[in-house]
Image (cartoon, rainbow, N blue to C red; front, top):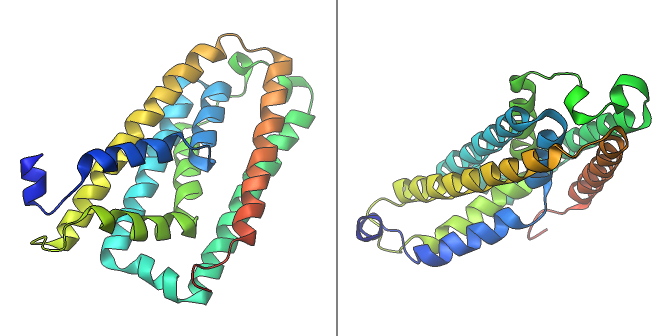
Length: 218
């Protein structure tokens, strides 16, 4: 802790608690990891979690470079990313709802579901995170609170703090995958369809919420 304080980081215990609460709050990242694990197994869930962590890394570097600040001041940049992100979430929702509505193989139990490449799950996690401008603005607003005003290198402290948060989030998502993998053993065809329907409805709601969001300060 003393070495981290030397780097300009402060209030780290509070930071860890805040990150845990944020990770445990239901959202697109948690929902995607949970649904992919229940549908495709631990490998699918871990791939989605890895994509989410990569997306957080993108946001951390973007905020450190000042790109997130552009979203805060440019209405056009914010609106463009917001609509792209909402469209992607809606696309995910439609796919899940279609699989829930379909019969036959699409309604099979999780163990019999058609295999999906790990890259597809990684990409889904990455895009779900990267295409959400609210996440970028969150990193820009949240991380500086835990960086001392006299930090010798604020950019480095920003990245280091982001990496600590990403690592903690990754551990949390791995725990979600472990729990969901156990629950998956009790799956059935009807439960799989219900899960698809619930997941699709929630992703559609997230898409609408993102589409309705306004730029902070607007």
